[in-house]
Length: 84
Picture 1 (cartoon, rainbow, N blue to C red):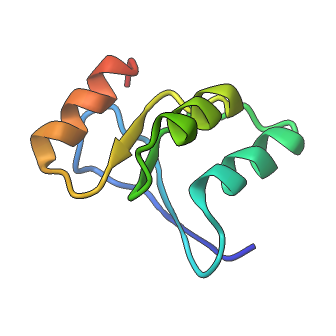
Picture 2: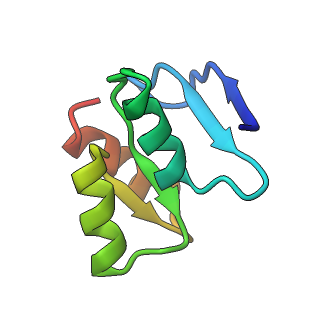
């Protein structure tokens, strides 16, 4: 699993930002985290915003799903609504 993680100070309350690379979809990354027992708070940013994808993300434990393209205010709103 190729994952790049870096601490970020761009948004209040955001502790860590991770980007998946290659063929790893954020939903698969979240599922692998949960399968390993990791309960980190998780939000998804993806180009897939269908109701089906939103349902799968929620079922897997994502606190939000933000669809590209988006602006800084959209991201801040999603983080705030998710309790970050």
